[in-house]
Image 1: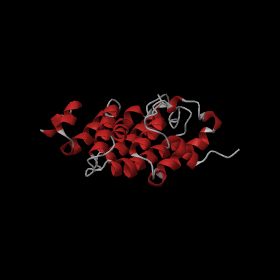
Image 2: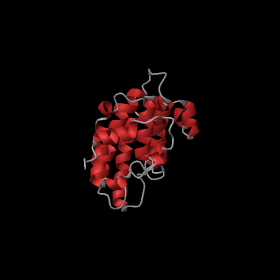
Image 3: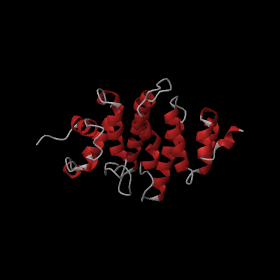
Image 4: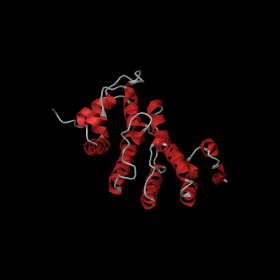
Length: 209
């Protein structure tokens, strides 16, 4: 039996009609047939090589594939977080996530692109809302993960893409209950590069005064 590889994964995730909204719940591919360790390595490789892997796929196809990976309501592939997962594995996944923002979201949702795909924009914006990086784990490991996410969000909010900046702002708002002072500092530093109505949505427009 041929071993499930990166090409198989990318085909499964992206080579689908966007109109087919129920594919994620089909039994066409059962993750139990692929060991988590191997599948995890493939996802890391996928994120590291997104520009090449996604060549030929539409933004909407990329959006639904990425959403399938990170959204626990669609799949159980976001298994890089949890009490039995070593921090080093989680760290590698978060680092690869930053690459997705740099090579996919920031590139395809660039400021000079007025016709970007709204599905891709949506997945970018809600990335940190749905990614389950706060979960049942040892407190010291959770603190390390939160600190890692904070550093990534600080890089994303500085990107030229307004969609990426909104994603970072939403992420910082989600992170704020755990790291309020650090999140406040980052938002205040970048408030001038964010729309006033977006800041007002999160009661952050005071930073503009």
